Amino acid sequence: MGHPAWVEDFDFDITRHVHRITLGPDGSEDDLLATCGGLASTPLDRSHPLWQVWIIERGDPATPAVTAFCRVHHALIDGMLGAEMLATLAATDASTPTQDPELVRTHVGRANTVQLIAGGARDLIGRPLAFLRLLPETLSVPMAMKRARGRSGGGPSMPAPFTAPRTLFNRSLTPHRAVATVTLDLGAVKQVTARLGGTVNDVLLTVVGGAVRSYLEDRGGAPTSSMVAIVPMSTRADLATGGANQVSAMFASLATDLPDPLDRHHRIVSASATAKEQAGSIRPTLLDNWGRMSPRGLLDVGMRLYEALRLADVHPVIYNLIISNVPGPRKPLYFLGARITHMHPFGPLLHGAGLSVTGVSIDGHIDLGVISCEHLVPDPDVIARGIGAGLEELLELTREREHPH
Image (cartoon, rainbow, N blue to C red; front, side, top):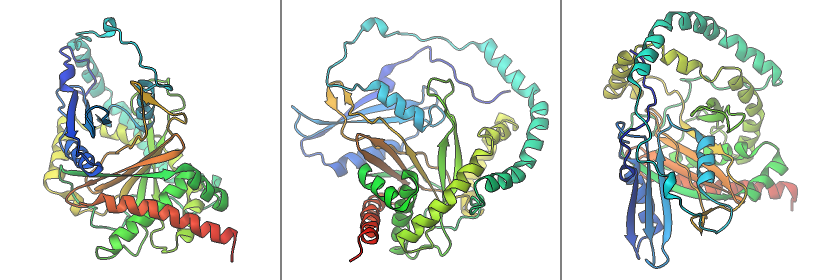
C-alpha cells in the first residue's frame, strides 16, 4: 500500500558489500578508472543494503597504491552526508585505530511487519489531505519565484525546466558507465574569485561549461543557446540532524553561448544570486511529496514505461548535466595509517542527462569526478582535461587583466 521504506537487514553479510581487487604491479591509472567504470555499470542489489566498497590495489605488492571505490545509492545519503561519512571513517593522523571485535554484531534487527503495514495504511489514508495541502503550495510557486527575484535585486531568472538545448548526451541511458578524474588547485580557484568576484561554485560552473562546450564543438557543434546545469544545494543546517537526503537543487545557466571565459563567468556570477534565491523559495520536498501522491505500483509502471519507450529522447530536455560541489575536510586525512591523497566523487545519472561532474574540496585542492553514460560520452577524460585547461586559461586571462602589458 505504501512507498518503499527502510528496514534493517536481519541477515547481514559483510562479504556482500566489501570486496578486493588486485590490478597487479603493472596496473595504471587508466586501468583503475576502467575498473571503476565497470563496477559503476552494475546496479546495486536492492534486496540488500544499498552500498558497496571495493578495495583496489595496484603497483608493488609490498607497498601498493590502494583505492577504496565506494558505492552508495543516492536514496541513502546526499553529498554532504557522504563527505561527512568518509571523514568519520578516516583519521587526522597516521595512527592505526584499535579494532574492537565486540562492536561487530552478527544481526542488526528484524523488520517489524506490523509497523510496515501501518505505515503503508497511514500513507494511503493521508493522501487526500496531503493533496489539499500540496495543490495551493504548488500553484503559488510562480509568485514565490517572482518575489525571490525581487529580493535578489532583479537579476536574470533561473532557467526553467524543459528549456535546455538538446546535445549528444541528452538521451536515454544505457547501464554502462565511464569515469574520469581531474584535480584543481583550490588556491588558483580563489585567485580567480578574488580578481573577478563570485564564488568557488561560479568558477566551477564556468570551467565545466567551457570544457563541455569545447567537447561538443569538436563533435559536431555546441548548441547556440546556453546549456543548463542542475546544481544540488544542501538544505542541511546541521549534520547531526536526522534524515538521509536533505538536498534541493537550482537550475543554472552555464552561459555556453559565450565563447569568452571572462564573459561567461560574469554572466554566471550575475545570475547566481537570483537562481539561489529562487531555488531556496521552493520547499525542497515539494516534488518528492507529489511523487508520493501516486500509488507505488502505478509509479513503478510509469517509470518502467518511461525507460522502455525511451521518452527522454522525445520530450524537451529538462537540463543538460549535473554539476555539484561539496565542501570537504580541510585537514589531511588518513585511512588505517595511509595518507588519503585524493577523494574523487561521482554523482548520479538520470535518463535524459548522461553526464555528471562532482567536486569535493580536500587539503588545498578540489578533486572532481566526471561520470558519463559510456554510449553517449565514451571519453569523459577529454572533458576532465578540458576542465583543468579551462581553469588555467581563466587564471591567465585574469592575470593579464590585472597586469596588462
